[in-house]
Length: 330
Image (cartoon, rainbow, N blue to C red; front, side):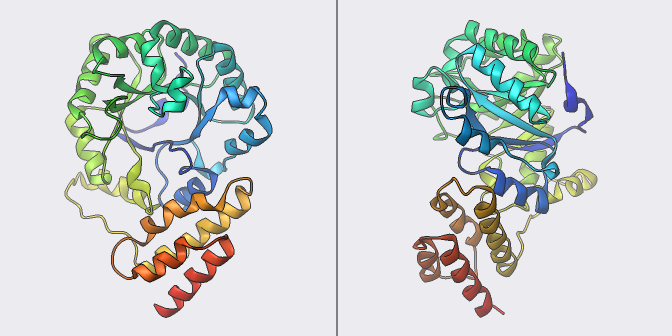
């Protein structure tokens, strides 16, 4: 088994979940500056799209900065030969690992037979993992769920472990549950026990509903997971991972984690906008709007300002509104 950088991580480690149209190159650069996690992932990229006509556009979403290392490139496809090509590309581009998405519940992805639909095709899933491993010197990991319509952990996880991936990031819900029910963290503990019973060396990462670093550390202690993956908690909070080591040193799980004051959040939001413009000119500015309310949540702003910001038609207009609010707060 090629474990690559996974063997260098202190446990428990904490990583950033890949989220489409959220954890793009601009936001990851901001996160790396203000609260770098132990491992970062790209947004998931369609291997089919890359090699069936969309290469020139999609390859731009595989840009990264050295400050993000270790950085894992995530792809999805149900075609082994396309995952082979994607893995070779990731190695050529200098990534630290390759991840195969076998958990995305999006209807359009599952309709292609990819993402969470791979849970319904275990033999093909194994074929894809083995082919990908053979195609690259990079460690290969899997991000998935505990089942499709129902909990299938007892059969699905051993199926994955047979192929000896370097890591399995397990979202503790089924595809059917989406994010509509609380994550079943007891299943992460079972996954760790199953891995140990089977004598596997694969790293197990738990994912689902983690609120902050205190919660992440608590879940690691309760389940025995090697790592914890945080997703939605990063919205508006690139400082999320900044105290992970402090929590480790104090062994405290009751720390109240506070974000910086509004003035600092506005400054970093402006920085985020600038990076989005510089790094992702091929993407719509409107993708940034999902971040606005998250950066501003809490005291110190009014709805009128948020409405103005959301109504901006360009990065220039948004930057102007932010500068005016920051000046009022001086």
